[in-house]
Length: 301
Image (cartoon, rainbow, N blue to C red; front, side):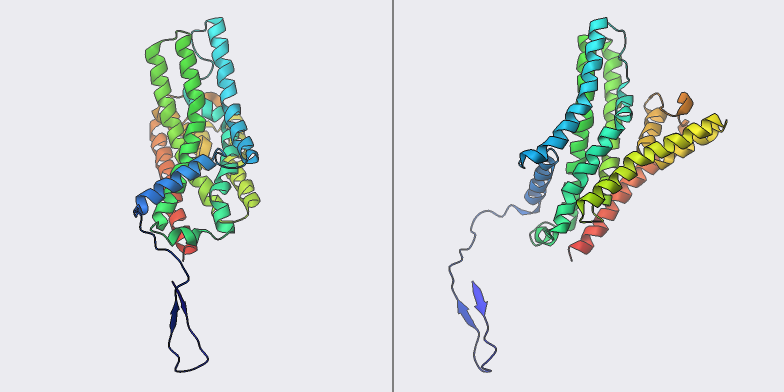
């Protein structure tokens, strides 16, 4: 129905015209359905599914790049009848952190920047969906996409280890520890990537900022750690790891998951320092979620 008001004659009444719109009489599926739909569409979009062929190239390429080294390691282990895998499950994501950072940098802005650029966020909130639904769906979708990206090579390593007839109990334990590690990494990287991407509607700026926060910070922290180690200041090395997302994950898994640290000298944080690492990681995850909520409450107004 459309309402037309005439402002010229003072005493004229409002006129209502039936222009043929039909009322929707179907089921009202509500917020839960809208949230699930946004989650599934965002997750599919993280790998270019349902989008153009051009949009599929980069995420699929990065997925392949993540898995190829694991396939090579498995082939070598099977062919040589090795007694252990070349890389621990918990170390794989640290080694491939550059690929993970590129994935977050490409898909974080794709998930939220276009909604900001084309001002479609208020349209989401004009439906039963609320700010918390939007933020949870986007956060969960990117974290799930990252978990898929980082878990796939671990599955390849695990299956290959079983084919190479390595010890089942040891491999299962290592695989479980690896899953915990990449789950924490996925939540942390997704939160950081979305917060940075939500600041600007310019996708290019978002990509550059995410790369700087994830990849460049790791290079800078690793360099400073190496300098501190060479200057016989090894006690400072664990504390320097608090300033990069990937070294935070490295510290947590070294302290609590029995992983071998990638820090200079192989000396990761102690159990007490590991508690600090874990608190910082959980604080960053919770803080990212809170910042996203504040950001989108303002955008949705």
